[in-house]
Image (tube, rainbow, N blue to C red; front, side, top):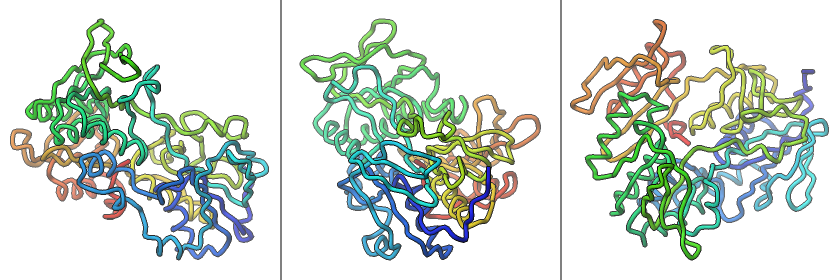
Length: 404
């Protein structure tokens, strides 16, 4: 790719105003970028807000939505950013670095940063049934909470981190909760069966029903409202509320025909650059990780902040490769899990401090004689120390250490 003339960059357009987009704007200003800065935000009713609390504090009612904004109005004003709200991106011409919005605006900049995040996956026919939910936005969280407050039986389809957090939150609200998924343990594909089995036991002890190893056929409904989840066996799990948490896909539909390389996200080089003057950051970005020697895409809050620092530096001419140590955390009942690195369900797992029986421990993941990840279960300090010892890079800062 030809090099851009960073010294003459007079304008930056950031498409997407959630954590990754806002962090990019802040990092540019910290690096003394003085040019025009525009954030295109598809959401109209909320200033840029943090998403991790949606499945935790907001869903349970511990936080009001007013606690979720990433910055105060005064802090946003100090950035001297032009916010274009309530108007999402419709198409992009990478050669001209021009975004056309849904209302027909044409926005051009010397540098365009794509931070459009993810679309939650849904089951066929789900959108036509009241009481069937996904959880990605603030509006999603508020609608789901409203139905939970009036409901009795919830079925969560999906046993990943989002599904298990929804299950724990709904249990706290007093609902009868069932989790159904093809996986054999909760979060098994993320943390392996040893830790996933312990998490499954924790939920079972809270009287959450487990239907693991089961395939879902479709949702059932009556008079436009969901009534249950039909399994591939024909069995129906009755429900008056269903939360579907079966993953997400990068929000790249609007980039079709743009000239950018698209695969599992916007495909970038090691510097998070997709084309001259065009960058991607956060959940939507797939980049070549030089340390791992392969392409990587991460869906967590820490990555959104850390990748934004690299993209901002590179816009300013740094030519810095992005080689993070991934990090996320989750809280369910009394368990707080911190995960550093990239654990695989095929890794060997060794508890090196504490014990599984006490449910307070730190574990190392590894294969081929190399440590791949560190997990702490109610042992955050020990997990950080093990990260320093076995994985490259310092632990994330307090304000970056929240997952997506």
